[in-house]
Image (cartoon, rainbow, N blue to C red; front, side, top):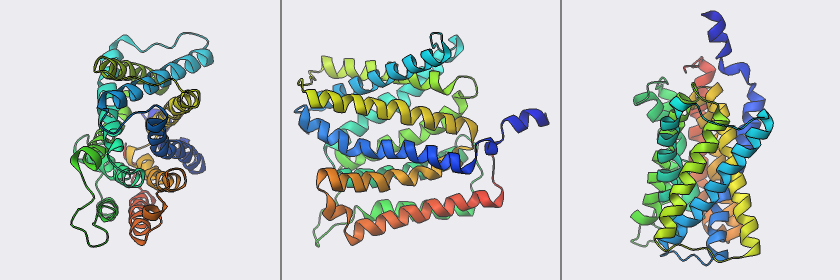
Length: 319
């Protein structure tokens, strides 16, 4: 029994390696916020063109799935295939993560700013911790984690407060509301990835859930009338976005497989920080990103993450 436990200890991956790999994943994810909005412009996808948005998402994830499967097959020198008993669980993961999460995310991002979307996505860390502790029962819910969640959600709410004394709260259901729904689905998928990774190679799992989800989204968007205008620069952007998913999710899944969910989730604070900064640079949203309210929101999100991470210094290594 001790030998088995040792093999599953989270410290088999060093803390510097975890930080580096998590940062790489989060930098890629953070760059997705402005890239999606730039892609909408390149492919002439209007905010009202829901079918086009879903088709765009589907093509991206189908390509990502093929990238992961091809790379994994070359590394193993044999075709990468999921175990028969894992086909249904992988499809279930795809329904949650790729189909459900990105259906809401792509539509929501078309009706909200990259900055506010990035900070709302920061709530993923806190949803992940709460879901892992209260629903999947794989984590201990400590006071550090509760206080961290409170601080983080304060940051998420702060960015939505009205500016200039206006009555509008800066929140619409189809915009920021859809982003929030996608974030909750992403949090559920993190714990589900952990469960599936006990029985399936994380690389195989990532590749096939992307491929299945991407085909479903692309087919749905296409038959609803979604199309992409051929654009050389847009195709390069689409390939980069597919690479974002292929690399970031595969790395993240491997980290989740080897560590407690909350230990990896806390590094998600990189997401809103990178997303906000890149949105400011690439989308011209610097006024919102570098306003006192935007910076304070980022501080609260980051403080929440640090507080949650402090729980592990007290020996909480539950898996």
